[in-house]
Amino acid sequence: MSENNNNITRRRFLRESFGGASLAGIGAIAGLLTGRFKKTKTVWQIDPYKCIACGNCATYCVLEESAVKCVHAYAMCGYCRICFGFFGPEPVSINEGAENQLCPTGAIKRTFVEDPYFEYTIDESLCNGCGKCVKGCNTFGNGALFLQVRHNRCVNCNECAIAAACPSEAFKRVPADKPYLLKPALSEAEGRTDHA
Amino acid sequence: MIRFFKTAIIGLASLLVLSSIVSGVERFPPPEFESGYEQPSPTFPPPSADIYEYIDALVLLVALGVSSYLVLKKRSRRAIFGLMVFSLIYFGFWRKGCVCSIGAIQNIVLSIFDRGYAVPVTVAIFFLLPLIFTLFFGRVFCAAVCPLGAIQDLVLLHPLSVPRWLEGTLRLFAYAYLGASVLFAATGSAFIICRYDPFVSFFRLSGNFNILIMGACFLVVGLFIGRPYCRFVCPYGVILRQLSRLSRWRVTITPDECVRCKLCQDACPFGAITEPTVKWSAQDYSKGKKRLALLIILLPVLVFSFGWLTVGLKDGLSRMHATVRLAESIHLEQSGQVEGTTDPSTAFRATGKSTEELYDEASQIREKFKLGGWLLGGFVGLVASLKLLGVSVQRHRDGYEADRASCLACGRCYQYCPRGHFRQKQKNQMFSERNGSAL
Image: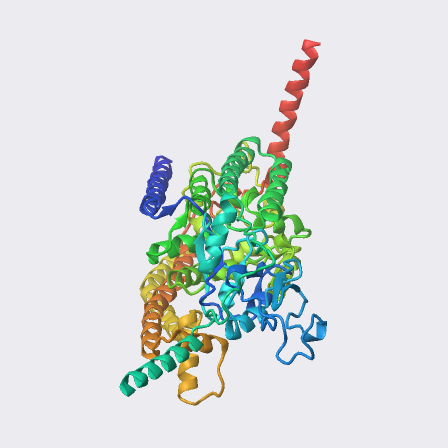
């Protein structure tokens, strides 16, 4: 009987010492990582200079309606009469008719400003992030249209499904206090709106 | 003079060529408006504030504390169930599932191997807190805090028992899954735990269709097999199992002595209650001793062969990394084995990086996978042989006990133990007598 008791205490001793060792191990991991901790969380964002507007953003997002939307940097826009982000490759006529538009959801509105300039605005509720207009504007225009993850929609998955499918590795984790990667003209504009 | 013109023309031409390569240059200068038009300024909605992450971490801490109290002190299945529903709603449907403790393994691993990645504090808290609680109180995280466990526990209608050998064999998958997710996270290839998380699409009520189907399959299987993901897949559960073996306090089924009625074992849907042992006969004992000796000799063989088998898969495994995939498709295109280009290869060519550089990177990653393949296979082999060793050792148990490692602390057995009922009855009587005298 006494042997049995001894046996149990030995087992218990071993268990408790292993337990202590594991606790120390967890502490060590925590200690090892303290130098590498970051107070702010990270969010996903697209580098507009790497993006090739392949269209994966529209289909790979875990949300039904993608968290990626097109952003318009008005300060970079040429206000062209014939916008390659707005008109399809061979428009029937140069007007706002649906058959002339490139955008599959008709999310871009074209309004006359003054001769010969037209303003293009994006209706974000219609945009599906397919990037067709981005491609058009990058290839033939100023590149004022580009895709960004909209953080009012993004659920911030630990592994972004679009990032995993992105062909140009344009997705990266950015600190949450600087959640957008904008083109220079727009970062200035954003700076103004932020302070206003 | 002519020379000057020549250089000027060449310079202009090269400028034009360069500018046509760089996408989105200012081809049309922004106009100066005369009509007093003002440019609209686009909005940039910020992500949710960090404070919510800290609140989540606080809720996790409180939920773990409450869960420990309910499991070990209050011993009430109903209360544990209530907390489970709360966790499912809060950590599942409200927070939409990210980041969870299970997925946080990968963030921690990535931060160890990638100097450029730092873990947000809240992610580290989500990873570490359940580990610490498990060391003290057993798997109270699995019991009522993990939303993935909760959703499976809720659908469990008619539990069937899984034979012990099958349970042990299937569990090997969880070890392999843990090893693979560590390997892919360490090499910066992918976060496979998140990619193949079967329930997060339910929490978000949207997601990849294939994953939704997989989640639905898990739930259908979960009607009959208790918590299939937790028992056979969950990589975090594997870590918690080992820590739970060392826990300071544990789930005890009977409040005093076991009457060996076996009711608790029938009630446990997870096969986590072990029966009392019978002492081995001398014949069994010598047989067991021989088997043990054989297995100890076999251990290095098993470890090596699993490692060798896995390293054979290294090319397939390394294709999880985008750079390796890209290098392979570029190689195929350049050697003329395939025609046309893909999106990734087009994007790569636009960067102007040399293919040699890309091939170098890819072969470095393949080397990592070679080492990783040995380690992963060796790890699985080691676990398998330790499992075999475990069944060849004589154990001593007096009554029905909750297995330290497998017990998910769901509390179902409490309400089945007749000794527990007896004690409750005594308590109630004492309570009513005291009340009666007071009246």
